[in-house]
Image 1 (tube, rainbow, N blue to C red):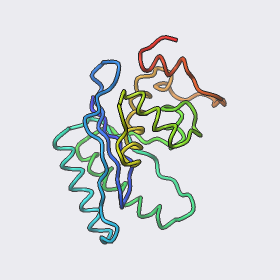
Image 2: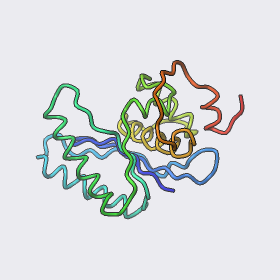
Image 3: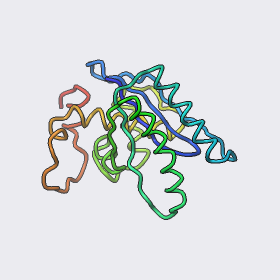
Image 4: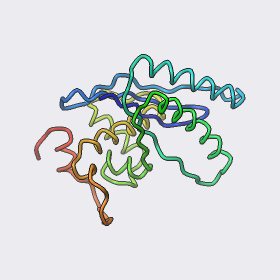
Length: 187
């Protein structure tokens, strides 16, 4: 199963390809960031994003897309521009009949680091550990894309997350036993 994780952006778009080969750690096929040009008009950036994504899809042929859900913080204009980039990504992947999964940022943090309020650095460190990487990509956008793809892989493998969600309950602290089980080690 090939998973494409994308941290969408209209200026910088992080991407990561994971493949579950059934071993202890998934294989990182590729991870990087597409720099779409700070001074380039939006339509040209979107066309560039589409071309780069289509090239990547043609080479690696992933079957699933994991994408961070969009959210509006303070700047509605930024959210709208981000929506254009997400639209390009969703359309390209849907046209190839890929399964598409979207996750809230807190859900990604919870799945990868054990806390929905984990710091960016904490999530990055857990990504490095769970993927058995010597070092992370230089770009935070690529690391975020790895986290998104990894969260999807972990959620799709877990019988607890594959079931429909039940009543929510607050969980505090890091789930060491769950983490060790995910990486194939015993406590």
